[in-house]
Length: 224
Image 1 (tube, rainbow, N blue to C red):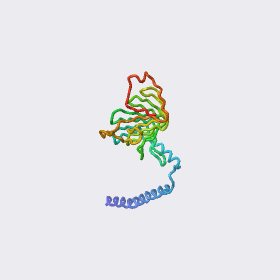
Image 2: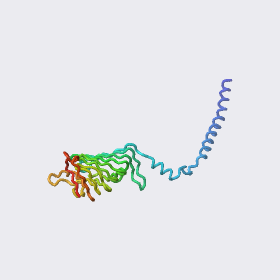
Image 3: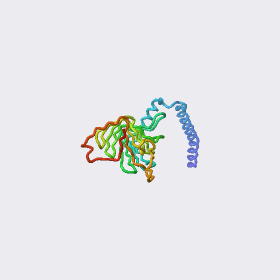
Image 4: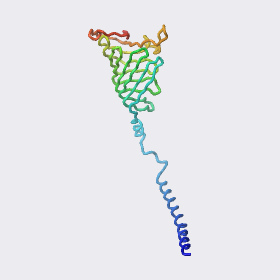
């Protein structure tokens, strides 16, 4: 009987303690919920949010592809930031290589520029170094490169060295068309892609250097 009395007392105590404990927990939940106002704005100013978004970046992005004529294109950068409303994607330390399907290559290096987003054009700025397998080493402030077809053009004057010596020009283009038009021009006899053409315009000046020209040659054209 004594054991039954003890059991009854324990049960009676639990019937009181457990409901009180539950009420205490529920009151704590209500108190905590009142301390958080869901209508309160996020504690960041709009310009701070924009800055945090702008600071997002991708390390060592790489773009690879091929043109309709089979030219292989690779563009890499040390860092890139995503596009923002009204602003294109930005990149730093750009390095590009175009290997032509008909043979030869061109490399492009620039400290900054824009990587392709909705557009198929990469823009290299800040002083672009251009080197080619045909012996040209040129420099210009800006260069635009289409990535869906072979079409490169400088945004202004170019200066550097070619197979025949030192040269300057108002503009440089590299396309498959002698006139600088259709970037997918093909040879009329075989239907194969035409060889790329390097073309200089806008007051071309060439200082002939026999030491450079000796033993060198190429198929690239220099039009004045």
